[in-house]
Amino acid sequence: MTPVTVAAAGIDTGDTAWLLAATALVLLMTPGLALFYGGMVRTKNVLNMLMMSFVSIALVTVVWLLAGYSLAFGDDAFGGLVGNLRHVAMAGIGPDSVTGSVPTLLFTTFQLTFAIVTAALISGAIADRTKFAAWLVLVPVWTLLVYAPVAHWVWGPGGWIKDSLGALDFAGGLVVEIASGASGLALALVVGPRIGFRKDAMRPHNLPMVMLGAGLLWFGWLGFNGGSALGANGLAAASVLNTLVAGCTGLLGWLFVEQKRDGHPTTFGAASGAVAGLVAITPACGTVGILGGAAVGLAAGVICSYAVAWKFRFGYDDSLDVVGVHFVGGIVGTLLIGLFATAAMTGGAEGLLYGGGFGQLARQAVAVLAVAAYTFLMTYGIGKAVDRFMGLRASADEELTGLDQTLHAESAYDHGALGHGAPQAVPARPTPLSKDRNSAS
Image 1 (tube, rainbow, N blue to C red):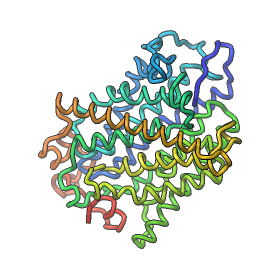
Image 2 (image 1 turned 180 degrees about the vertical axis):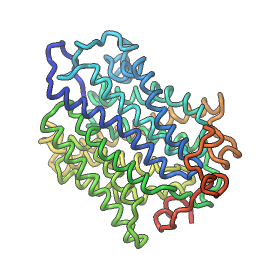
Image 3 (image 1 turned 90 degrees about the horizontal axis):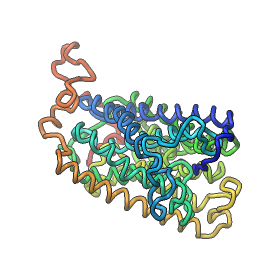
């Protein structure tokens, strides 16, 4: 997804039409994520979870148009690390400006939808216990100081990962998945574990909602990855097919692990496996063939199904498995480019299994380490600053009562109308997976 800005004469209507559709698909991913996350929390925190995703749309849009786009995609200003401020408040970009073969305003909007969903993803790591007011401060600061520089490294003109290192990231394994996962881990450490973590079962309250959210994410992911070709062409078609295939193999891989380990394939596992496959194929969809795409998705489904339990072993409370799925899945997909990249897709670079040696794998590993370290350390610092300034965590009383009531004065479910008194968590049918995913026992 590397843009080249040219004179106004180069608009291609077919490419523009496809990118318009892809932009709408990617924007839909954030409401899909809201449902996915909303179904995973307890009934007392559903609306808060939905709000954290929806408000990210508004917050990121404002800061992206003010400065985020310029920092990410402006001409390089400092050794491949960040763009200049030439396009602050969209200065110099009008309806006649063209990037590649599409209007620059459309390219800006397409990239905006990526920034939105990346910020929203982080909320899953700190669900059930974070002040909404603190989230309103954290998201804009994170977008400008973390997301925009990393996007410049990987996709921007003169970005060091793209131009100097030569690592590949077609649609956001580094920029979206690893950045959100490492940032989620950092904030989970700052805010601390939920009350009852590793003691109480905190099962998803609405698995149909989780499945619906996963389906909307999968639908939107076709635009996420296919649109990153920036044109209506064969590369877009291959990326869409790789996305579909990897989601399928990720789902099957996770269910295989569940059946072997727990004795039952679950709906929660199906949704999680599909998302894991989609996460992993994101950086690779425009660099690997169909067999490579299937392998990437399968590897992510299997590895991530085990990675979600690491939080109990290491003691970090990643509420909705942002680390286990997005961080780990992003690493899997980014590294496997070094094995499965083919010149037929990349136009040059090849992975180890296609005769390219270890060079591309090494470049991918360096990029993973750099992005993970930067996003973790910067987000940890931002989280600490916000916590010191206004407090990041809700009070114990607010957490126990539920954030919907205490922070938003609302309830997702009117249990009182059914004669059950105050809102309370509705226990899900225990399953081996839900036990493994949400409790230490």
